[in-house]
Length: 421
Image (cartoon, rainbow, N blue to C red; front, top):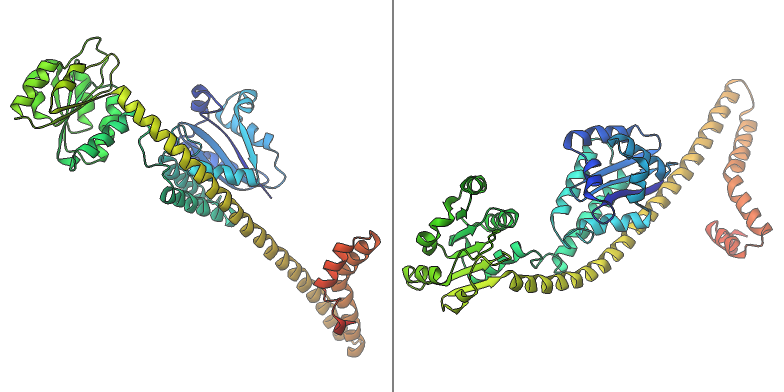
């Protein structure tokens, strides 16, 4: 039985191809059903996110080209294009890959935590579809434990690696009770949306969105339960906010030193934390000259992000060591299971031979043959049946002058014990 990991991701394939082979919730059900009927596939799990689509299967006599054919056919994409952008891992490499993916070491953003939840969801879908049995159950549960250990024992996810997240983390360090603070977001683009998402995750309750286009601001504000204002209202309302984060496409500053100075007077010099994520700047650099205004630019945050990325890369090296150790642990389990299976197979075969000879002996007695002759024949045939394979193995090892195997077999059958000579 071969373990295979086959897929494409953000490193190997353009977004146009990743979009084509992504699975929707409905198509995932159909795909799992299709794989279940695929001759030779025993277990399968499909992981599908915006950055990757991966098949994990255990299969007997299934060529990886057949799986590529299946994936290309299912999504109606060019087989050669898919093959050119795909990666394939087998056995130990496949085990290591799924652990690296779950720990965030293979993600677009190093150490991002969302992928673990996505893999857990993929595993549950496959399990409910009847495509997970002993080996995959053990592998994925082991993988989840490894990912949890990497999170707890390393700093892989501890530091901000996007300017949006860094801005919110900086605000959190400056204000002890961030959820109680009022925040003004200037702009309504993608960066501000990310900032807003991080602020909501931190429990911030009072949010306002100011934008040149009111409809765009209202669209963002509706999902945040936030206030809405136009850019022209900034001078009269700026003093109401403890934190101001701005990211627009304006070619000129929207918030000047004088506007901030007036706001600070109305706040009776309560400090304001300001983050300018725009290029060109939205907030005049001279605001930094004001004693109670703390202004950070995108360059300041990029420096923080770079330091944090270096920290995550160090953590990734630690995580790789943990994964290597845990791959070995899973392989030991796998080998022990194979040994148990061999023992069971050997004993089952012996019991089958015994039962066949016993049934024959009973029939002979019923037909009137001498019980003593039947028992003697039974013992003779049973002994021959049980000793046939070991005898052949000993003979072959001896003929080939394989002293190591001969000694091992002799010890296994206790032939080196003087009491048995």
